[in-house]
Length: 126
Image 1 (cartoon, rainbow, N blue to C red):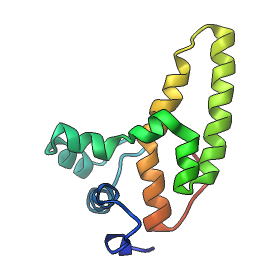
Image 2 (image 1 turned 30 degrees about the horizontal axis):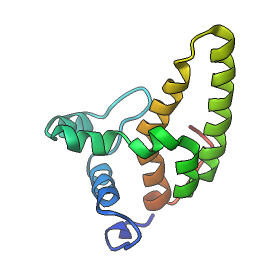
Image 3 (image 1 turned 120 degrees about the vertical axis):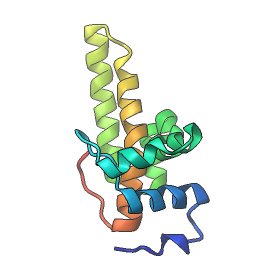
Image 4 (image 1 turned 90 degrees about the vertical axis):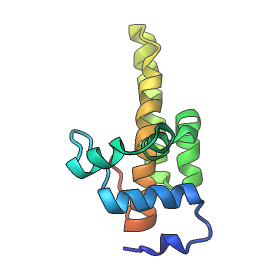
């Protein structure tokens, strides 16, 4: 709804760069990637790809960082998902499964924050 994120003083240049990229090329879905996005991402440097595709704060601080961003619905879901995955991983013996949740959150946080700040909605879906 609000495309005034360029003038928003509370957003860093990194967020503005991400939002501009998403406005222009869209963002990858869970199962597929738009051809425009795929083409645009290939033209970026490694650092730019990392900026667009991952959020390292979200990787290390997951639900805490989501709360800080104001994505409280996502933060609650991620907390319970991480808790459930850790219990299952401990029972099964695959302790690395916690990293899978962290990677997923790191890859989706930019999209979730874009939806909240620019599009004006926040859902309970992950």
